[in-house]
Length: 247
Image (cartoon, rainbow, N blue to C red; front, side):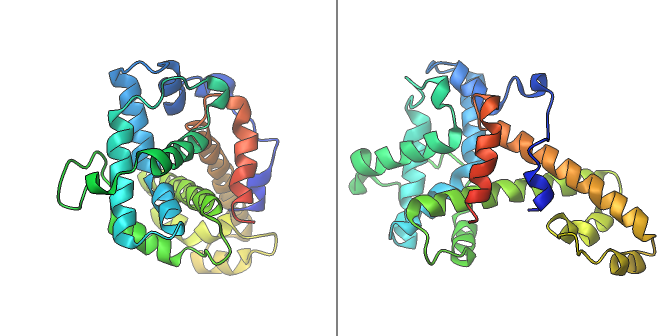
């Protein structure tokens, strides 16, 4: 992350995000429809890892956490969990965690758990990768809820970097992006001169390129956040929640 990304003056034309994955789900009003089902499944594919991290942080073993995560999504996507959801509660991040807590408290039946290798896995989840990510994620003083928020933020920022990298790659600038990616999170004392020498470019050009990368980074981040909201007005609040996850 970069301090530039805290710029509260970043504005996105409101009509661009009139329809997002989460607004499609909420607008369905609990009625199953191919479009809303697909949008919900896509969100779950992207953000399953924070739930896995939450379950692990609650003290479940690796195997139990994997089974619980799989069983939750099997039941979540099978049942109409969206029924009764109001748009003023429309943060996918909050809704998903609340659904998991309800599942763990009231619906989890160990005897009916989807054991690995059995049953139908509703999502493509690399649970081995999830465990690797969980192990390296600092968690000494994190509650399960805080761990969920931290894993959510990390997942979201990883998607932003991947999108930005793909865009640069499509323009034949993949190697340049890889060289300058550290500057996305660098402060004012970033070693522009050293990068200019390495890349055989002027320092001024490096600064311009990094400025544009940071601007596009903020745009993609805003887009990614808005995809999980029913109300675009909550974007700044959710942005603050993202940064607070690293506090």
